[in-house]
Image 1 (cartoon, rainbow, N blue to C red):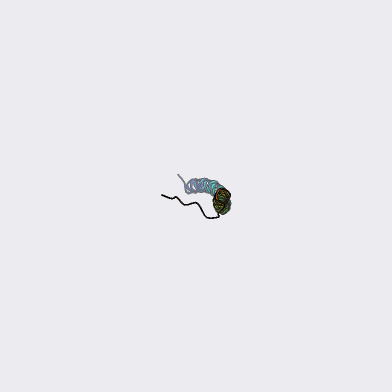
Image 2 (spheres, helix red, strand yellow):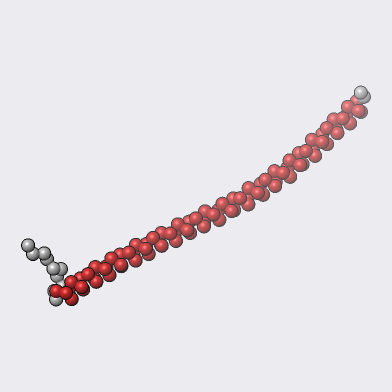
Amino acid sequence: MTDSEKLDLILSKITEMDARQTNMDARLESMDARQASMDKRLNRLEVGQAEIKKELYMLNRQIADTYRLALDAWGKSTENRVWLETGSPEPATATA
């Protein structure tokens, strides 16, 4: 094998390696783009999750407020019933 043939062989190997590297670079860029897209989606999910937590907290407070209001109303209705039945705002006491 002559020096010229050896150089041609080396050049063809380098050309193949360059083509493979170009292909790998393209794949890497594609993977980087997908990762960036996934990062954006993840950030949106985090923001959405924070909003849901905030709304859940507010809903929980509204439920608690409604429950307290219902208990107050029930207590008032009981007091009013006692007042109407006995004529006194004090609850009736049991006598033994």
